[in-house]
Length: 96
Image (cartoon, rainbow, N blue to C red; front, side, top):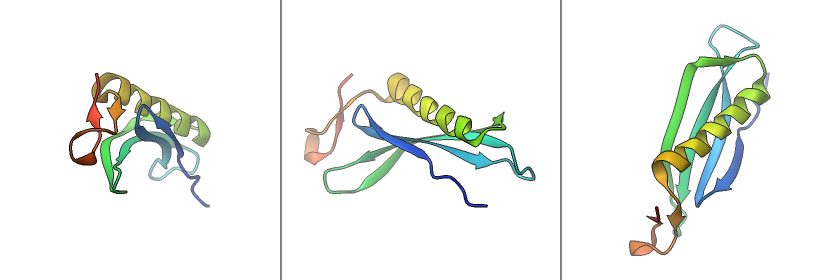
């Protein structure tokens, strides 16, 4: 069975994605995963934050992916702030 690719979009200067990882030993159970990445002007990608909680199990893979995307938004809103791509040395800088 092929894995469904994560949901991904731009959010406040970051690229956020929500994915669903299969629970080991179960075919129809998924847990949510969230990632926050920053693409710098020189096309270097940096993973800023990753969240993965195997206790949040869903029977619907799409629901797990959407939950992961929502968790990535929360991470940006509460811990990372908005990025301005006019920072030092061409890299993004926070603008809280």
